[in-house]
Length: 340
Image (cartoon, rainbow, N blue to C red; front, side, top):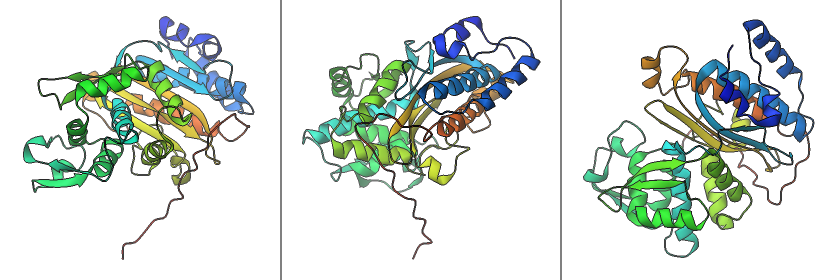
């Protein structure tokens, strides 16, 4: 296994200690060392996470820009090119939802108001559900559109949000909240936009403000977290190797396009305390066939395999020690149904 020197140095003091350079033999030793670390406190959780991140991203290759932090730790577990301005892709749908919910909090919008789904607004890109309806015009509530935006990553839902929160206003709301790099890209139609850019640190900060209760109202915070933690949300990366109960403790949003493979979110303990916040952005070329990787958006992609291992480590690091948390967000218990 080899690790780019700049990549290794970018991990910061704590994480760099866990990055192994050299042969396959040292890689095997690194895996053994990582398995021996038990997360009994924030510092040991940092070491465990840092070693897994270093090993898995080196194996996947590509260019990674990331920030991972454990509540109560004195430093980040991973700080790797954290201030790099990167393509956010659909991770920025959290930012879009934040702006819409900000307007809900101010009484300018309501989740039960309806938005029109017309034929010309539907993006038939095979993502999401609106392109599958086959019958337009129709209408849905704003809450329905937001749920599709964040779970199925429906791109038509982006346009539906743009109907009630145009690009210029959306960016202004985000800037007012302190996010100068997390911005969408306006187009000629003021109600449409590309999803734009961010930095790993800004996305991390947005998530931290969300679980800290300073980003949105209590009701909007709970709405957003419940959607992102639902079993209908993205499972091919951080949440793939988790049980149903564990998945309900991870609020996550992925984003992918061209050679970019991104994911950001928060891991909660069983009591609903936010313990680990992660912000992972990666672009190719990755290990293996570059051309095949660019059109593979599934769980077998090298970057997603790396995130799967990282996700298992993040969850295994949670719940083994007490963490400071002003607010808790207990996940809803899964209640499967057989119809009827």
